[in-house]
Image 1 (tube, helix red, strand yellow):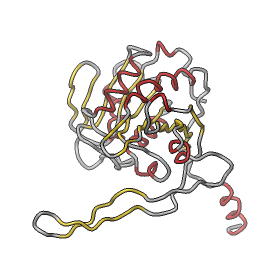
Image 2 (cartoon, helix red, strand yellow; image 1 turned 90 degrees about the vertical axis):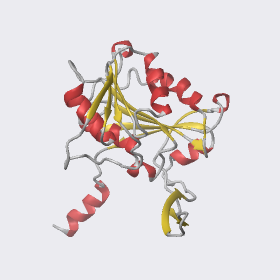
Image 3 (cartoon, helix red, strand yellow; image 1 turned 45 degrees about the vertical axis):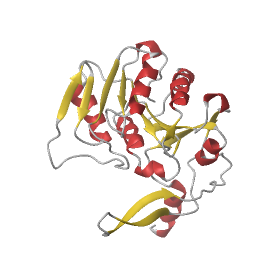
Amino acid sequence: MVKNLENLEKLRILVTNDDGILAPGIKVLQKAVQSITKDIWVSAPTTEQSATSHSLTIRRPIEVRHLSSRRFAVEGTPTDSVLLAVNHLITGRRPDLVVSGVNRGANLAEDIGYSGTVAAAMEATLLGIPAIAFNQLRHEQHVYWTIAEHYIPVVLEKLRHFDWPSGVLLNVNFPHCPVADVKGIKLTAQGWRAGNVQVHPVKDPTGRPYLWIGDFSDHASRQNGQMDDLTAVDNHYISITPLHLDFTHYPTFKKLQQVFA
């Protein structure tokens, strides 16, 4: 078991994201955790790294700029940012918690596999550190950042006595609505979309054709007895989904044992 977060006020927290060190969401996240502890470090990509998933830079050196005390811009991916911070940039003891986000947009259902925000939390989990990915749904360009500001300390307080299992991270999605319209918090399963990602044929100003990968289409529940993350946020609930790094599908494993006996 990974240690719990009982002494919130004494936590050393690493803040990261995939939208880049200057993104508004990371400022919201840092402000939210500052209400809990003063021992905060920030290590995030220099530029936006959305949909980079769990990619790691291994074929070139990585430039790291020391912007200010305990704040670093990494010329790489979200995974790079966490790995370098934990293993080199942070002096003294390692972080007790890694928080990633607040992503400007949802990371639900299949998004999880593409998300750099979630991948940063995954990297921390691989390093044995409790980690949470925070995401704020948006509609076009409008974002209710006040939901994340209000509820991040609430979520962390509720996790104070949670015995964090090894290999598990949390993926949190805040709905797109005013704070007053949030109905509460739901534990959810990862959802599933009935359709595939949309591809849009477009042309540049000179008329040359391109393809633009767009949003996912409609969704459906997993029908496993649990509310899925898509349904939760659609109904103005905060969705919290525990994710496990072990990708092994054990029911199939048992069936294959008979095949390959």
